[in-house]
Figure 1 (tube, rainbow, N blue to C red):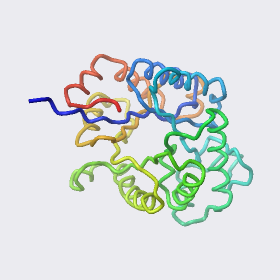
Figure 2: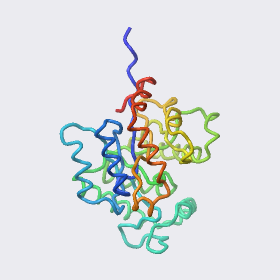
Figure 3: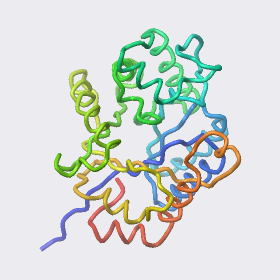
Figure 4: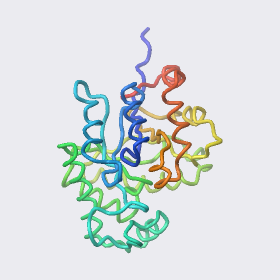
Length: 280
């Protein structure tokens, strides 16, 4: 009797471009076969043509990694287009302000679509092609109003890309302990339905959201991420090395090194094998 085929998943490192130490860590894990997807912040200070070329070169002989657009609409990052509102001190609004503006539909639809188009165009200029997939920094692609603009832009500019939805493959009774993930579940239901209507693909399930507490054992968390995750599911991660640029831009610092340590360890592939999981 043959063994069951492994579940093939996407393990996606977010935030390529945010800082040199993150870029280096992500490329290293791809070369080791420990990641098979990464999403790029095209407006981040440590993303340019040379960083794009270094990442794209990893697919020169064989397709090692899916490369996506990490749509970014929150501070401290600055828009590529003019006129984005609200725009405090030249940067995007905070996550809280953006979420509130989106829920009350106070974002200007024209400037929102222009910014999304600019980020898509910057990706195409850097890589010479459309992204394999599109997701969002701090999950902004799921927010009301923003999600509609993302779907329209993807349909028009990158119809072959799949979109990250963040609904978990767990029964509702098992979802109540994580407020952040529960909100993502709720927003994702609407996002999946709207994507299907316009003929765009989404991943069947998602995992990887947690409180980024450095005291938590990431290996134990990761084992939970694999629970019930189906074939084609996405696990989000944030590996990286801490440097001055990262410390300036993002509160996630040492947790990135903890994630990198686990993903680069012998325990990671052993865990996948034990639980019948392989990278897609």
